[in-house]
Every structure is written in structure tokens, then in C-alpha cells.
Image 1: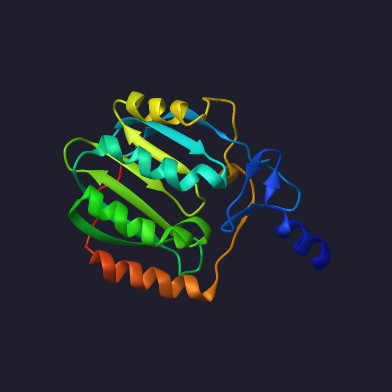
Image 2: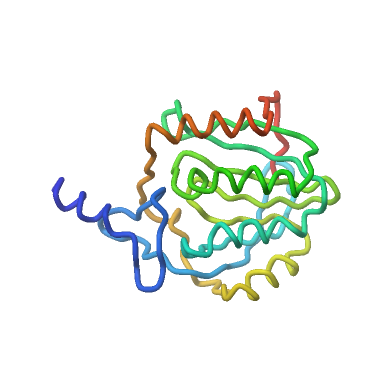
Length: 207
């Protein structure tokens, strides 16, 4: 079984879809990864709030560039949350925050840590508009998730980049899956935190 699993973990391409090193579907392939995006509605059971949400799976060769493009509708100044499950049991992650950073500055820092953001299954980032209730997440599963009352600007970017809408698409998170990390990723994450000047606040307002 270990040889079979090892061989499975080496597989990073399913058809035209290329995975990063961060994530793999389980051995029995409950979800076969493919490119696309779908729309849904996030419902908060406690508050009753409903927010439109877009979730995209993008092949590795285009993933980081499309993530950066999706940040443009957020405006010139944003808040950023770095998410890590390093030093946890894997069922939760810790959030570290930086408020009010110019988007070009943030994008420059993120580009310096592209390898970490793409290939570490214990690192994610969320970028939040300070001008309107909008958020773009590049999560630990390397999904791109957008929360906004108007998703059209984000849909337009995805369509322009050749990512088609497919509301029947299953996300890799909807089946058993495996995260991957390397010791140097933890060090790189800590360096990125230092570069961005993030801190750990008492509370985060979730959608």
C-alpha cells in the first residue's frame, strides 16, 4: 500500500489540470481535479447573512497570475490575513493580520513568496477590501474563493483568463485529500510574516 500511495502522490496531472505540490486527492480519487469556477451563496447560520461566493480551481501554470488579477477589484488599499496550519493538528489554522497595505506593495511581497503560496499545503492568504465588503482567498487547498455582493468583475477576469463557469464542478475539498508541506516552508512563512508586518488580533470578522 505504501508503494501505491507513493506512486499516487507523484501524480500531479489529471488531463489538462496540473496540481501544485500542496495538495493531492485521496488514493481512490473521490474528486478528479479539473479547471473551472462555480457560484454559490454563503449562509451564516448565526446571523442569517447571505453572501454570494465564487470558487475556482485553476491549473498550476496560471494559478498565481490569476490570483493576483483577482485582487484588482478590491481597490488600492486592502487588509491581508496570512493563514497557517503549521504547528497545529491540521484541523484548524491560525490567522495573522495586517491592516491597510497598498495593493501594489502587497502584490510585490506575495510575488516574492510565490513558491510558498503555491506549494505549501499549510499556507493560505486572504485579501480584504477596505472600500467595500469583498474578500479574495487563496487557501491551503490552492482554491481561489471570492466573497462579494457583486461577483461580475471577478467572473470577467476568470473568463478572460480562459477559466469557464461550471456549477457542476466538484472541488478537491469535497472529497478526501492530502496536504503536503516541507520544513523550509515554515521558515519561509515566518519570513513572509515579518516582511508584511502581520500581527495576531483578538478576533476576525468572518462572512
